[in-house]
Length: 275
Ligand code: G1P
Image (cartoon, helix red, strand yellow):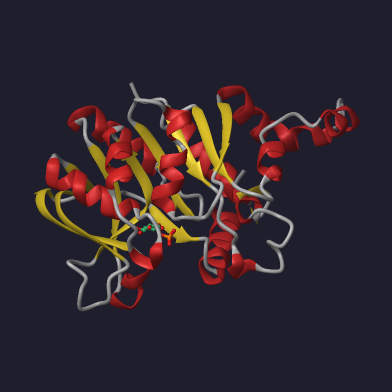
């Protein structure tokens, strides 16, 4: 069974200050839709309709976004403006939403651990909304769900990354199973070029089996003094099986200003103008 998806959204978004001073970075819009909604739509398309947010202070706008706004809806009822809300109403109808707080910012691994109370003892997806993934066919998470049905183990999405970018990511080494799939043998969080075991960088899409929670609890602090998901994934790979999947589609790093602008232009040209 695979129906749950975690969204760690506690991060501050300092690179977008002052825009993110009073607004979650996940609510920054690509044209007319907030980043987080693209991510939730990708999860729903993949069949993961139980959405769990691991939030922090100042993230209430995300809860409000995935809820009814009676005043606004009353105001525009029966007018031509109602259709602007169609896509978010659809998301609200198709998914359920729950929230838990990450008390302290102790890294992605800690955020996932806090999410255990939302996902329980089942395999689940993880989406980092900063990474916008677009595909002309099935979305990236949907592709990974299909793989999970076949292999029944943890899967991380990877992308070939140029050398000057590699220090921003978890990087894998693996044995090629087929041209787009590797069995992971090593994994390093944010390596230098010299340390990097390959050019395959992990991007913000994961399917995790629930034994990851126990492994996270056993994982010591890693890079930058944080609990790193990458370290727990390496332990999982050494104990069993972790697959790395070179996804089909295009990824934009919306956590950086350049990536965000590129994504905005792409969405405007290819999605907004054609809708
Ligand atoms: C996190 C992970 C990293 C991964 C990246 C993908 O890093 O720790 O392994 O490659 O997300 O976006 P962050 O970008 O949160 O520092």
